[in-house]
Length: 184
Ligand code: PRP
Image (cartoon, rainbow, N blue to C red):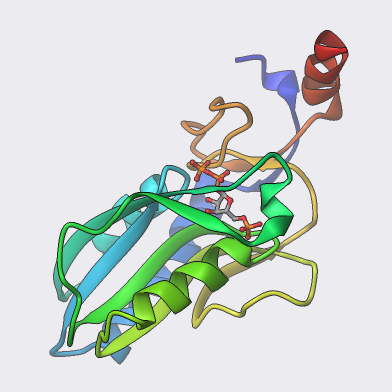
């Protein structure tokens, strides 16, 4: 990739490590002596989850979901389709949903409601980033409130690219404006 694609680095590898360690310490404290089912929402949250679970001193089970929004305007429709569901029954279990970013919050709103309907002991959310929009669901465990910009890296993508960057940065507009031009 071209380093110029990233306009500004928001969180370095070190910032992220510190943030994930802080979140893990809170989770370790709150679930002491308990078993936890960590539910990762693919794909964006996978890198965050891998770092987070390795800092947990708990009995952890890992499960994964893939969700997709309906329709082209789906981000704002709030209707989510489950593409891959959990492998396990979560009845009576403590569940932690792991997300990379809360944007409109609609994905998580749907997921929390859906998982709560399965009668778990508890459902909470750990989100690395919350876009600074002010009105979304507040996760119990939050990494950073981030500016309302196009952020990539550490699992976050643009058109499936940049997920492998070890840091999180703001994507330069020219990257997506070029693609928009090409579509027209
Ligand atoms: C991103 C992110 C969340 C969702 C948040 O996933 O990982 O799941 O969008 O958006 P919302 O708060 O507006 O609902 P995306 O659909 O980009 O898929 P990906 O994780 O596979 O990149």
